[in-house]
Amino acid sequence: MVERSLYERVLARVASGAGPPEARPPRPSAAVVPWRRSVAGELEVFWMRRADSLAFMGGWHAFPGGGVARGDAEATLAGEPQGAADAPADAGAPASVIGDLDLGQAVTTAVTACALRELAEETGIEAEPSHLVFAGRWLTPPLGPVRFDTRFFLLEWPAERAAQPSAVSSECAEVEWIRPAAALERWSRGEVITAPPILHLLRVLGEDGPETGLARLRNPVEANLGPHRRIEFQPGVLTFPLQTPTLPPATHTNSYLLGARELVLIDPGSPFEPEIDGLLAAISTLAAEGRKTTAIWLTHHHPDHVGGVDRVRRALGVPVSAHPATAERLRPLGIEVDAPLEDDQRIILAGEPEMTVRVLHTPGHARGHLCFLEERTGALLAGDMIAGIGTIVIDPPEGDMDDYLASLERLERLDARTLFPAHGPTIRGARAKLHEYIDHRLWREERILEAWRSGLRELDELLPRVYDDTPKIAHPLARRQLQAHLDRLYRRQRL
Image (cartoon, rainbow, N blue to C red):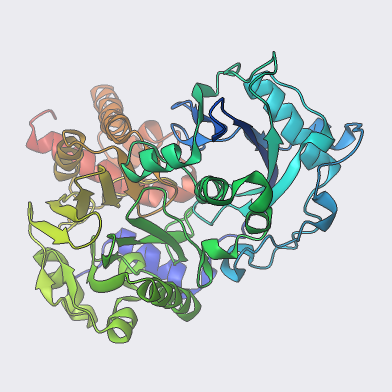
């Protein structure tokens, strides 16, 4: 019987009863899609790349917009957006996205004021409410603690107008007018990352235009995969945030389907039947599109990554693959691994385009931890090497700080563009984020050395000094990370 680490025991306690924290209601927000006809008569839209420094969707491409501010509800407006009165409350969102939310009125004075204010602040142009055309409502999937309830509006802005939109906000790294088809082509090559509603808007506007496509925009049921939204931030990487008993503040573990036609399912981690039901329904919808799931791959053995493995294996009749060290940890739990995945193995997934996936052994958080690099687009499915929400726990002896830092450094040297973590939203700028993680661990290590030089020696003495920025409720796990740092410093003869 393999002894469970403190980290695994904490996950077991979460699974045994407390349940996830109550989710905060989504923040109302609005976005505007300026469009025009070029001299050649082609439709163009105005979009921007958000600044890399932004906490939410930094480096992503989007349309001008943002959250409703306190003063927006008190704004006095003359008129209202076109189509606002007929806007459906649920905007075609699947049940798993809406949950128990009471969405209420689709377009309010505050939302309209927000759209016009954000447009002016980010692009420098001003419009009237009646110039806006309601074009759909989208809810952020449960990838993190902050969700947005966003209403989209179209705005015709002819090229001959003297005032043209530009980047007038520090939130904009660059802006441009672009044909929807050209924007989608850049996305398909992995050059840009963007959110599902942006992709849907681009597709519909490119195919049907801003007038004929309104019905598709306002009720985007075609963007659903069973009870899920189709979340494909980069081509060939479908994201499914599944509720799991995981380490707070995270409440979900991201399961991924990787591939164009031949798909592999990574980390079906939820033990909850409704979550797996929804995942299987989405896989069935994809199968009807000609995209077949042929295998399950595991990043590592922790319960929030393997909770649904056996049920999905039985339902799909596909093999499970993992690192041999993961297979060893799962065997006593009754979860069998059918085939090994080895470091630097390259696996080709058939489709248009064909995808080559490089398997990377990245121990540190767990001895058998794997990451998967899709080499064409630079998408790195990073498991628990990094987190879009929360922290990565290194708990000896299963966790090892030397191994973890070496794995981070190895990933930093790769030609990766985008990180797809197991918890939280996708992260643009892979190298910068990996470097940030390395710097943070080394900064923590220097704090330990400073405390040691001041005469502190025992864990209980070092902990409050070194982790004074950490809530006390997290100190038991911080104590294990402190031990991991000390082990590393002893091995390197720095203590």
